[in-house]
Length: 124
Image 1 (cartoon, one colour):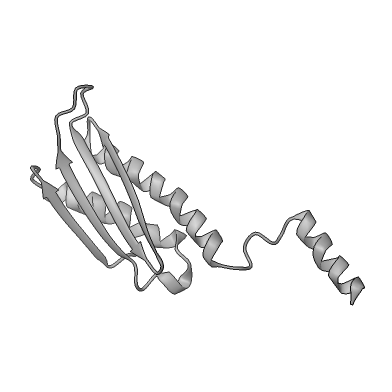
Image 2 (tube, one colour; image 1 turned 90 degrees about the vertical axis):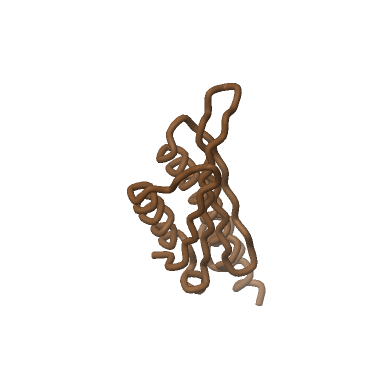
């Protein structure tokens, strides 16, 4: 679980249920982090109350600092908890790309990769 999560409300009073829900959802993102980045991950969560023309009233923004990158996701919906869910899904996609880029052995399991490795052994 991500230990350092800073939850702030901008024109929004953060109650205990929202704080607990955000901690649960954002704290579980360490599952998608590589092992070397789990201890140093820091999350900043900003919950805002905004008035948009198309009816979206609440906005959630999460900034996740991992070694070498800063991952950001923002979404606004009618319900604050739904906004947190959508932001979590966006961050999961970004973390998968980060993990694939930072770990060299992930992505070498395709058929062409096997062919390249076997061909390189025959050439030597």
